[in-house]
Length: 140
Image 1: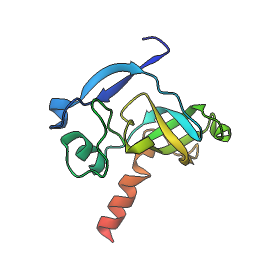
Image 2: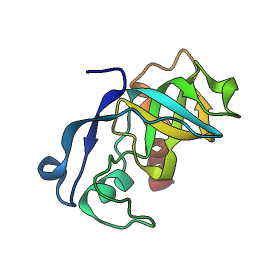
Image 3: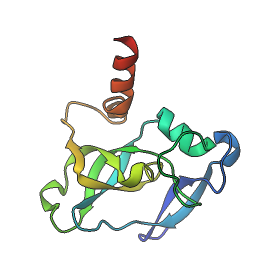
Image 4: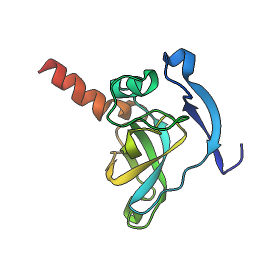
């Protein structure tokens, strides 16, 4: 695989995950102003991700084909102007427009990117953001 391509799970139509998710080679995205690119080392699977796969409840419907995934955990490997301080950090991030995270690299706003302590291993960090909050809300 060339340096300008990566693998991403994408959908071309709504349906059950095992029927519609396809592993494809796609261009590596580039961060814009105030954005970072995260090299994924862990991802979460959220209810919102399932709805972006099966066509359920969504405030915004991305244009096909696209990669689901509203979170990514990994290392910031590229930044746009204004996000230079995050370059090289281990992070948990919410992806741009809440999709694109089921890929080797994903774009996130710097404001939606949070440093991940070294003692939290990947992919365990995938349980930190939305899965933890939803579980906590469900219990309490």
